[in-house]
Length: 250
Image 1 (tube, rainbow, N blue to C red):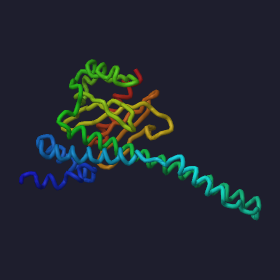
Image 2: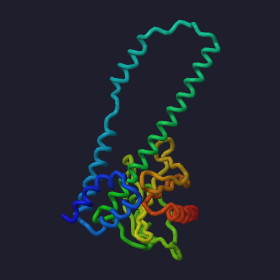
Image 3: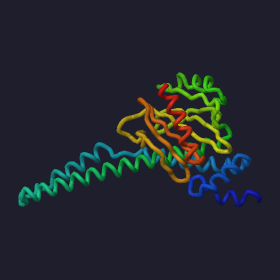
Image 4: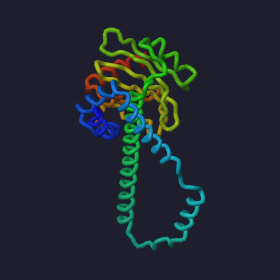
């Protein structure tokens, strides 16, 4: 079949394991091949479903109480160490706790970027990538009113290479947010906007990065977190980010 070669790469594309050039070529093919697009959408939806199910389990209160009882049964250690040894041990524990906290934060941030990348790919693979189709910010922004617990500003794109295609509702950790689709050349960029929930993985990294094969820019403005993600080059992502920043501050 003509699509056999493409189908063999769909799994790698869904996991963003292809090179940047292969991702762009594959993306161009998906825009004209409904069969491969349907296959990709199914794979991405399965990934998202597995992630959702994986978060449903949490230790029960009975398990926590059982663990606490086991710890209480252990005898307290006899004081044998000098104050210097105790200080060293305390310092080591403090360093370990900081490393553990940093590692957890880094892991949750990577998990957030991975899920946003999946949402970006799933959106582009969908037959209806946006719920409100318009290049007019004055049409797209009002559409979100009453659907989100917050509001945001959109920029005027005149004299820029970017074009707004529309927007849709998106969800991360069961929290609603806005997903806006912008186009530059043959590339599409997703802009996600969520409320800044302090202390959890919604906190942005405030800067550019490259996650898998996508370029990403994130920042916070007021009580909102912005994530700009796409396979466009880093300069385009950065330029769109600056335009969005200016609009958010207006």
